[in-house]
Every structure is written in C-alpha cells, then in structure tokens.
Length: 194
Image (cartoon, rainbow, N blue to C red):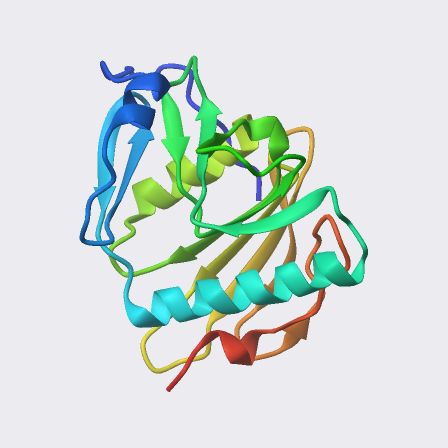
C-alpha cells in the first residue's frame, strides 16, 4: 500500500500551536488537528480501549524485554505530525524514542504509531491519518479494525520511499510478528472480548 499526500489540500486557520493549547474534551473524545481544521473524534468504546490497551501492554513488555531504555510505549500521546501542513493527531498507542516528559511529541521521536479504527472513523479520516504518518516519516504503523462479531483485523506497515508497504495482515486471530522498533509477537485473538 502506497499513500500519497495531496499538496493541494486547502489549509484551515488553526496551527499546531493553536491545537496544543486547546483543552481536550472531558468526555473522552479526542480533539485532533487535520490540515488546519479541528477534528473531534468521539470517545472510544470499551472494545476500542481494550484493543489499544492490549497493544500497549505487548509493546511495553517487548521494549522492556529488549532492554531498550531509550524507547517507550505511550497510550494516547499527542504527535505534532506537521507544522507546515497544520496537522496534529493522537494515536491510540505510540513508541517514542528519547525523553517522554513532553505534552506532545515531534514526529521524529515517533518510531511506531498505532490506530484502532472504530465505526466512527470514516474512510477519509483513515486515509488522511495514514498519509500524515507517511509524510511525517513515522517508520512503522499498525492498524486495527474491530468488526462486529468477528476477530480483529490487524495490519502492519513499514515506511518505504513512496509510502507505507504492508508487511502483515491478520483477520482470523493469528499470532503475528509485525515490523516494529523491537521484536514483538501479537496474538490478534486477544484484541477483542466477546
């Protein structure tokens, strides 16, 4: 999969700096900035949070096992994807390199971004976020979708010269070894409770 970023997207009036001083909603929703426009995603469902929590725990444990004291797994951290393109997002999980004592992170610090898609995430939002991560040169991207009554779908990508290249796809509860900054195995059947 190769994703391109349109250079003809009209930019909205908000900057990354404006976004960073906005208060996040109290109800669990997330306020993100895409192409200069504030975008509110609804509060994640319990199943969404469960999948994100499982991925965070697996990633955190793999980082510890690898002895990487320079790499840290964080849930729901703000990432300044692009100041010129006025985009800032809050992935469900990130792996960041270096100091974690920040309110938001520069894209260069992000080694892996994880998005858990819910029914409320439309195709345009998904494509825009994937393109933004590619433009920010985030090396690894994991995507999870939770279809009703079925096992989680899991995709893992590695950044190439022209965008992301799909390395892993699972849809039947398989255990996979997705590309990541550390060696990790994910039992995709554990990403969903029935």
